[in-house]
Image 1 (cartoon, helix red, strand yellow):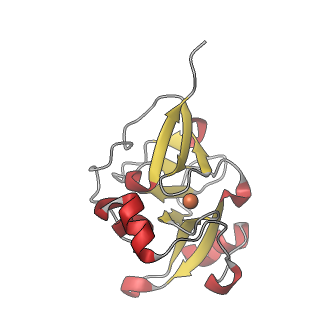
Image 2 (image 1 turned 60 degrees about the horizontal axis):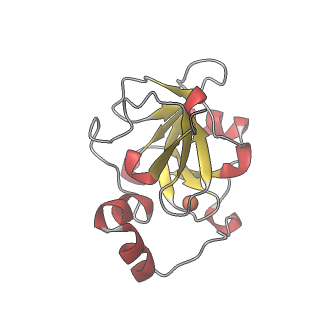
Length: 151
Ligand code: FE
């Protein structure tokens, strides 16, 4: 199974292992994020494919967590996956994210969450390109892009 293969490459955590550094109540998150981002980041929702603002973003910079600002991905690892969601081969640093087994919708997948706040980011699959062979399939709504400063 893809989830098992991915899990063997990176530490797969159970929910009980993950203690976010940033903790807010549901109501605090909702007012902080707004309904659209709350649905994805705090309720595990998925934005429609091709709808996100970063699908075709090729600018150089850093992608931060849309909820807590944690640095999650770098533009050098972004690639065109054809999936309709921004896709990356690896996180900016290994422990920026946590991986969780997700058996919702009758499919075994590996969910990706921000380690700092526990926000839902997307899923990771083992059909990505070199060098990792992984495809971190992310929601644009979960990310904030920060371009590198010029000059
Ligand atoms: Fe976060």
